[in-house]
Amino acid sequence: MDRKNRSLLIVAFILIAGFLFLRNSSQKTEIVSYDNGLKAVFNPDKKTEVVSVFVYIRAGAIDEKQPNQSGLSHFLEHMMLKGSKNYPEGLFASIEQFGGEMNATTNKQFTNYFINAPKENVYEIIKMLADAMQNPLFPQETVDTERNVIIEELFLRRGWTGFKLAEALEDTIYKGSPMANNVGGTPAIIAKAVRQDLFDYYNKHYTPSNMTVSVAGNFNMRKAKKLVANTFGKFENRQSADEPKLNKKAAKKQNIIIRDNISAGLASFAFLGPDIRDDDFIEAEVASEVLYLLLYRSLKVEFNLVNSLSTSFESGLGAGYFDITVSFDPKNYDEIKTEIERQLEYLLQNEISQDDLDRAKISIKTAKNFSEQVQHAIASNAGYNALMKRDDLIDMDLFLYKVEAVSTADIQDFLNKYYSKEKTVSVAMLPREEK
Image (cartoon, rainbow, N blue to C red; front, side, top):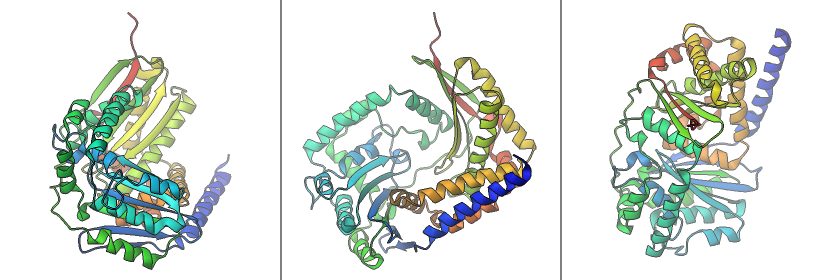
C-alpha cells in the first residue's frame, strides 16, 4: 500500500472511532463525592436494556500484613455476597430470579464486586450490594466451606503454566515491595484463618473512603443518586488502615528459567513504568501499543520466531510494569531475547515513525470506543479509575485528547526514562531437559 492510500486509511479509522465516541458521549457522566468519603460514578444510557453496578474496594494483596493476613482479601471476596443482614441467604438466589449475574475479583490493589441485570432491577441491586458491603454476616458454616474452596483453587492454580510465569515475574520485578504479595495467599495460611480474622480485616479496609460505586446502563439519574446517598452514603466512615509503602525502585536485570512439563516455551520480558497516578501514564498506554507493532513486525512477520505475542502495561500503585509475553519454539528463545533487546535499544536512539504512532493511537481509540458500548465495561473502567483517583481517565473525551497529544518524541523520552536493559526482568517457562 502506498503512502497516500495508507494515510487515507488512517483518516477513515479515525473518523469511525470518532463517530463511535460521539455516539456514546451524548450520555452525561456524573462523579459524586459523599461526606463519609465514598465516591460514586453514574453513567446513564437510555438506549440499553441492562444495567451494571460495581463496588470497588481499595483493599488487595498489598494491604495484607505478611504472613498472617496473606490471602484475606481473597477470602473476603468469597464471603461478602454470601449472607448479610437483609439477605441472610446471600444474593445469588435473588439475582437468579430476575436473570442477573454476579461475580467478584481480587487484585493486588483492589477487590471488586458486580451485578449485571435487566434495567428494571437497578435499584434493587444497589440495595443488595449496599447491604452486602455494610452488613456482612460471615456465617461460620460458609466460612468453613469457602476456606476449602479457596485452598482447592490455590492448589489448582499452581499447576497452570501461565500462573507460574506471572507469579515468578511479579515476585522478581516487585521484590521488596508489597506489590510482590501473592493475591491468593497460601493454603497453610488460609487453613488457619478464622471468622474473626475476616471481621478484623473487613473493619479496617471496607470503609467508605476506600470504596467506589459505579453504575452504568439504563436508570434514572436522580433516583439512583438519591438511593446511593441513602445507602452507601450512610455508611459509618471508620478509620481505614494506613496506605502500604510501595517501593518504586527498579529491579536489577535478571533472567530466570523455569523448567516444566511443557512442549512450547512461554516467556515474559518486563520493566517497571509509572504509577497510574503519574502524569506520564498516558504515554505508557501508547508506548505499549507501539511496542506491539514493532515487535510483532520483527518477531512474527520478519523472523517468525514466535507463535504469539502480546504487550501490555499493567497499571499499578507505586509502579506499573511493561510486559512483553511470547509463546515460541524453545530453540528460538535466545534469538527472541536478543531481538526484543535490539528493538528497545533502537527506540532509545530513534523516534518511531509517525505512521506507527498513528496506528498505535487508532488501536487504543478503537478498543476504548468499543468497550464503551458494553455497560459492564463502562461501569468497571469508571469504578477502577475513580478508585485510583484518576477521574480524568473516566472522561473519554479527555482521555482520547491526551492520547492524541502524544508525539513520537514523547515516546522516545518516555522509554529513555523507564527502560534500561540493566533493569529488565525476564522469566521463561521451558521444557524439562532430557536426561
